[in-house]
Every structure is written in C-alpha cells, then in structure tokens.
Length: 96
Length: 476
Image (cartoon, rainbow over all chains, first blue to last red):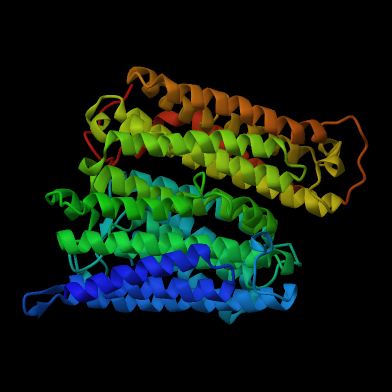
C-alpha cells in the first residue's frame, strides 16, 4: 500500500506545482484535480490495514470527489465566461 | 425539529426555494431571517450548549453538531448581517437573480461550519461556502470575473491543503471529531497535519501574504454581496482555526509557530492599513481595511495558545479575538452597505464624488462614522472591548510587542478612515438621487449593534465562556 500512498503524495506535489506555476486557467483547473486525486489516493491507501480496509475513508473520498467535481464545474464555467469577455484564458496580472 | 437543526435547514431550504421561484428570492430570504431569529432566540434562552447528532449517529461514525457560546455568538452576528443585507438588497432591481440562492447557501454553509464538530464535515462546509462566495463575486458581472477566478484558485488551493491535513489526522488518530481528537495521544504526523490545515485556512482567511485575492474580489462584487464576503466569509475559516488550535490539538502548539502566525497578523495590520491609505475608491479602502482587521485576529495565538492556554489571562485574549471577529463583522457589513447606498445615490464610490454627502444622507454618514469608531477601537465600541482584552493580556503575559501592533493598527485605521469621513463631511452641496430613509437605517442599526457590543460586553463575555476550551477562568 505504500506504493499508492507515495504515488498519491507525488501527485499532490505535481498538482500543487501546476496550480501555482501554470498561467493558463484551464491548466490550473486540471492541476487542482490532480492534487485532489493525489489526496484521495493517499487517503484510500492510508485506510488499508493488514488485510482489511477501513470503510470511513472510502465514504469520505466519495464525498470529496463530489465536492471536487462541483468545484471544477464552477471553475470551468468561470473560465469559459472569462474567456468570452477577455478573449484569453490567462488572468491579466499574470500575463508576461 | 430542534432549533439547532432548524438553523441549518432554514437557509438551505430557502436557497433551494429561491432557485425554484427566482422572482420571489427577497421574500423567501425575509421568511428565513425571521424564522432563524426565532430559532436562535430559543437556543440562546436555554443558556447552555445544545447539541444534536443527525440521524441518531453520534461520534465517531456520525457527525456531532454543537452550539457552544462561540457558535451561537457567530450565528447571531451572521443573522444580523444577513438581515441587513436582505433589507438593502430587496429593493435593488439590478441585482442578478442568482444572488438570493447564493446568499442563502453561503448562510447555510456558515452556520454549518460554526456548529460542526467533525473535521471532514468542516471541509464540506468550507467548500460549500467557497463555491457560494466565488459565485457571489461573479454576480458582479463581466468586470468581476477575473477577480472571482483569482479568488477561486486561491480558495481551491486552500481547501485541498486543508483536506490533505484532515487525511493525515484521520490516518494517525482514526477519529475526526474535535472532542475525540483532543482525548487522543499526540502522533508524529500531527505537526505536518496541523501545518497543512493551517496553511489552507490562512489562504481562506486571507491573512497576509495570502490576501491578494481579497481586495479585488470584495470590491468587484455588488455591495450587498461585498458586505457578506468581507464581514462573514473570512470568519468561518478563522473559527475553524480556533477549533483546531484551542480544542482539537491544543498540545500541538509550538511557541515559534504561534509567534509566526501573529507576525503574519502584524504584517497584515501594517500592510492592509498602508494599502487602504493609498486607495481612491471607497470599496477598495473598506476591502483593504478587512485585510488589516483580520490581522488582529491572529494575535490570539501567542496570547492565548500553547503554554499560555493554562494561564489566567488566556480567557481574556481568546474572548478578545472573538469580540474582534464579531464587531468587525457588524461594522464592516455596515460600511459596505453604506457604500452600496452611496453608489445608488451618486453613481460612484470615488472619494471625490462622495464629497458633502453627509448632508444628503445623514443617517448613512452616521452609520459609517460609528462603524469607523469600532474599527479604530475607540470606546465604547465592540472593537474597543476586543482590543482592551487583547492588550491587557499582552501586558500581563509580557508580550508588549503585540500591544504596540494593536495601538499602531488603531492609528492606521484612524488615518485611512479619515479620508472617506473627510470627503463625506466636506462643506459642499452634493447632487444626488435620494435614498429611502428605511434603507439608510439598515447600516445604522448594524453599526449601532457593533457599538452596543462594547456597551453590553459583560453579558456577551459571560455567554462566550459557554463551552470555551481550556480552564474557563475569569480572565483579567
């Protein structure tokens, strides 16, 4: 199970880097989802003990996925609306 | 249905109804305000700590809801602000219809956060609040979209960091209930978990240097939404921080860490104040003032946390920070609602356009002045009680430097609030569209409540000690 937990942690690191460093708004939304997946993977892996699984993390992961999905939906909606108005998908102050 | 459950269910049901019947949003919100006030009065009248376990499942499997003095006081503040927001927003024809369901949804999320005792449930509440708040910013129209997106990116980063911390807490302790966690033995991962959760919550509370999203977002939203965003939303993540550091894991507190939080708070006071001095638009000034006022809240950590939690002065500092959060909420809502009415009256919030407006709309000018007194911390306001409690603690515990921050912050607040006041009371005859008197009275009532908190501070102080973490001492 350590493999899954470490993979999860790596995904979190990768996603956080994207969330902070990426300029494209859509990339940032994807990065947020990568972090989310990493956290959920970590949670699932940490909920496994020698031969049996703890059901609580699984229930919480499902709730977390629903929350992350609605957040992504709002984010994509805003990105699309912003792109319609400004014609790009980069926030003004972040442009080089 | 118990009054505690009603306080959560009423705004949520109202939000759903406002989606179904969009043109009746204001009326639905009005019903929710009146019914919630009834439920809250029933809870406060019990003078105890009501709790509920929805579905009959107690902790650790179920989620415990508990309304201690802290939760009830915040719910009452939110109710007062929401009543004011609804009263001023109802006659505004230009508000987009999604405003009402979003405002009610944010209210439901706030109440859920205040009474929830489960770390994961707090996460769900935070996300619900964030999504509603970001969407509220976006109701400001095309020009608000960039600010809403920036807010969303920050807030999502914050919530995912918080969630990662919750995961570590669960894997180390196997429980997520705040009271059960306090009874478990410390684990080696606690520091990392608390660090992640705290970092996430700092972003959401907009503590310096994570505040950059706040001024554009709060200034871009329509005025009633700004009042909610500035007065209420940062308080939710601050309450979770209080629950974490004082209730769930009081022993995880390290002196250096607590000092670091307060140093960020002190920097926020300075930076927010100086930036507020440099703005030319009223809403920007008020938004930067929020950055500064949030800074004071974080002085509570070295004053009442860690080893200090066992000291006789801890009660004073903890209660002082709660007073600051409550009085700032009321005063800031009053200011943003004033700004909204002035935008109706003169069509802009530039300081030069507001010149002499105190003659035209005297009640709002009075409200703004009273709110300013609270933000500066002058007696007899709630802001004064807050600073008095924190300052006496700072001297009693020998941490004089935080008292200097409190005093300096008050001077800065006086300086940046003088400019809008100077414009308002200028000897000029303004040209303006009249605003109905009952609308002008709304911010005045909120500002009077903020001042009243100081006048009636004895009762509120005693009430806040209900369920206060640690040894409930008398304080100084």
